[in-house]
Image (cartoon, rainbow, N blue to C red; front, side, top):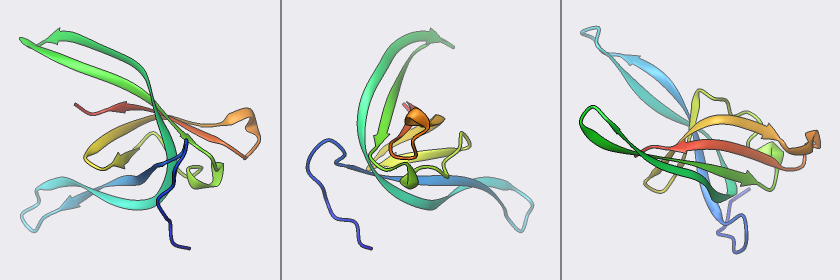
Length: 112
């Protein structure tokens, strides 16, 4: 089934990616990200802060990525990330809202 652009609350199409470690012929390792699925979500900011670390100002913000369908995100884990355009969200938690298998919620921290 093809996904189409949507208007309304769940209008942001995210891609959920899983990290794998790739080893080169020389033995060096690097992270690679593989797409595991797409979901339509609303992106809602929760918290933002700035702090001073290692002689520089660092910003951090957390978001709720609310999915209309639990099935779209139920395989996501804390070892994965969500990508929306150029924005990358590290998944903190995945919640089955009211344990009803209808709506899902991803709590995530946006990479700076």
